[in-house]
Image (cartoon, rainbow, N blue to C red):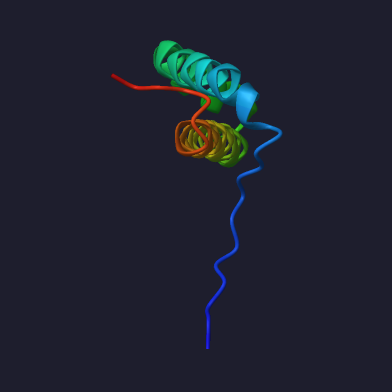
Length: 84
């Protein structure tokens, strides 16, 4: 019996990999740049709301980065990109 693992890679979306990686890095840099503002936001808007917003932002950042890296792997495996 063969086990088929689901994959989130799409060969037609593979050219978007560098854009996704760049966007993920920008989102990560934005989160790091806002670290000193978080206590003020928590005081103004509530700790729970800010904590949930941070978790959502970092989750989306991680997903975009992982998706971009996976798509980059598709490009390498299909021979569209050569890494020397």
